[in-house]
Amino acid sequence: MDAHPEFPPPPGAARCLVVDDDPQVRAALVRVIQAQGLACESVDSADAALALLAEQGEVAVLISDIRMPGNDGVALLTEVRGRYPDTAVIMLSAVADVQIAVDCLKKGALDYIAKPMILDEVQTRVTRALEKRDLTLQNRFYQQHLESEVRRQRIRIQEFFLEGAQTLAHALEAKDAYTRGHSQRVRDYAVRTAVVLGFTGDFLDNVRLGAELHDIGKIGTRESVLNKPSRLTPAEFLHIAEHTLLGERILAPLARERPVVLHIARSHHERLDGDGFPDHLHGDAIPIEARIVAVVDAFDAMTTNRAYRDTRSPVEAYEELHRCAGLHFDPEVVKAFRAAFPDPTRLPLHG
Ligand SMILES: [Fe+2]
Image (cartoon, rainbow, N blue to C red; front, side):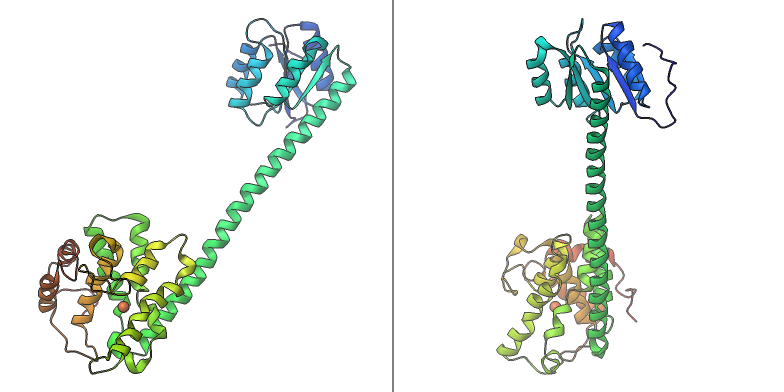
């Protein structure tokens, strides 16, 4: 590497590397580039250039001769484009090599300077290369910044939406003494059952949310039907069944990032034997998250005072789940729920 103490670069100056096997060309280029305020070094071969870059990191501008002993400028260009894509590369070419220089542009060189060089011209080309590089970097920065800002806003909007949905779910329960606390119990049962089934991370978070909001569609169910103490007519049953579809519609803004939540809202009344609603799905066609909520929702309904039936003890409710496993409920989920709460006399939030 040649030392060039003549023009010490200002602090923070952009770095430039000149690669040429002719010492006179190197000296002239370095002088003129340093004179325009850049930190400039030079080496006499492609290999020396790669070694310097590996040791000191990328440079803003690399000016390379095309014809050099050993690896030529074209090979160096290819390497530099691959390893340091932000480096602006300018090729130096003799008149006879203009076609090669043009090929270099196709391979990613930003510009080429024809030899013999006009030194003023070199400064103009280097300045232009730097400006072009800055623009590219700035563009990328804004793009990345914009993407992360959009993501941040999307998450924030989702949070607002979720807060609203949770408030709605709680308001829905508050007006009905029989279901008070239902969504939180279903949430806690579902999460612990999902843990026993081996689920973790995002899936678990979405089960938590989906379980809490599973009945949000009941906002559209008439109270007279919701709290009817006697048997439902077929029309009333259809009306109440719609809460699954309405729930999914209400939660639709979460579709992209949290499909699990929507599956729970839509499919938590499906049965393994296909006798559920709204889609009459069979077995594994019912998303596992919905199969989990189906079990714990039924358990909580059985063990809570409801307008339309008597309360069962947790032990009786467990027996009922077992009796219906395979037909109504997923046996694996029933087993996991039992394992999550082995002592039916000590259930959280009951008492
Ligand atoms: Fe429901």
